[in-house]
Image (cartoon, rainbow, N blue to C red; front, side, top):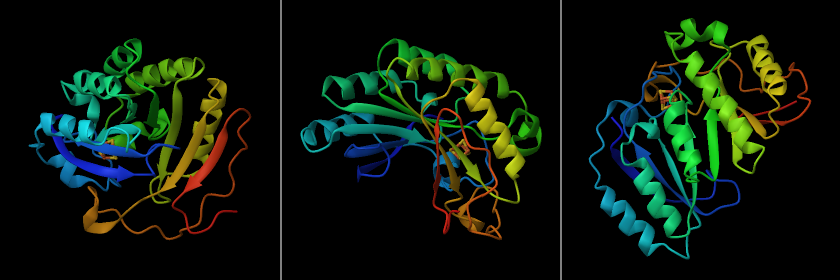
Length: 235
Ligand code: SF4
């Protein structure tokens, strides 16, 4: 788990305002039913990390940021080394994470290796057993969220996101998350995103949502921005 699986050479979508590449790392400690990267989660990463660093050297001046994603990139033992190299070459760094490895995240933050973090807020703790099959990650996720909100107050870019499928989550679940983020003093962007895929392309062969409409009966956040991604319509 945690080996380099693939590189996306260019994206304008994954790091706000930056021209980025993405390094994908194999393996994950969760098995979200809607996960649309089963090959990465279940596969083996066999790509040479030095090839990624060579790629970054060649794209200096053309790209501005490197995104570390997966799977769960924090399982990559050499993640700090790769990020150190990327920052040394002048790239901004972004980590996509499920937040279940707060010790690794803290180490990266303390060393100043992270410019931006996209954190998955999977579900309220009360739904964790049912949706994630375990409650053991709640404490870890809470620790990551607390640390990241604190660092965001000192300049770290932070977005929080929840993938919503009406068969799995209710609008009440989303309301609990919104209230929790407000109570914690979160001030960044919170995204509720539609599933990116369904059927055989997902880990849990999840069904197509009965509606493509964004949830429309949510409380208004007091301190942060709520946006919707990948829905056909929003109210
Ligand atoms: S959605 Fe993210 S956290 Fe869930 S299984 Fe896929 S890679 Fe892991």
